[in-house]
Amino acid sequence: MDRVDKIRGPISVLNRSDVDTDQIIPKQFLKRVERTGFGEFLFYDWAKEPGWDLDPNEILVTGRNFGCGSSREHAPWALQDYGFKALVAPSFADIFYSNCTKIGMLPVPLPEEEVHALMAVAEAEIDLEDEVVRFAGREVPFEIDPDLRHRLLNGLDDIGITLQSGEALERYEAERERAGPVTTSL
Image (cartoon, rainbow, N blue to C red):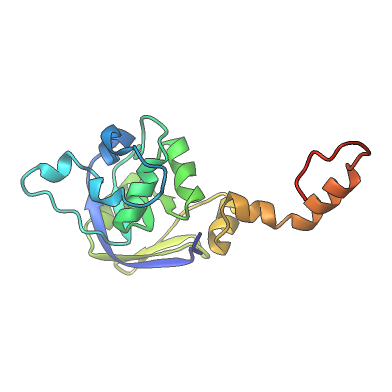
């Protein structure tokens, strides 16, 4: 997983609330287990609407309760595969939020009035180290769980976190060895 520190550049705006995971990536495209190849189906039904235009910038700014609905991991995969590295919204569905952080995508909750102000500008910077969003000469703070922040800043997914405890795991395994048939691989 790539480290997340500062994400800056043009923003994409999806001014819709209660966007569920089936709208993000419809069920008919969930037939693979790889994390890639989903971006082309992002917002599939909406992309057919006249005037639809959503640039694949690194920052997506959207409405409240983003990622609600079923808890499919494919929704963050599709957003990331499309090019987004950070999402800014007034609120996110809990499981969706967690699924984003597990793949290195940064979900940033901001007050609704700040999200609308951000939607009106062309560029922004999200600074995870300082926990602030900068745009139009402003700095808007956000909060993130310290453990999630550590994971994202260091590019650690679940396996990376586990590997940090390698010596402790080896010690545990050595201490629990018992006489008898071998039940682990060598």
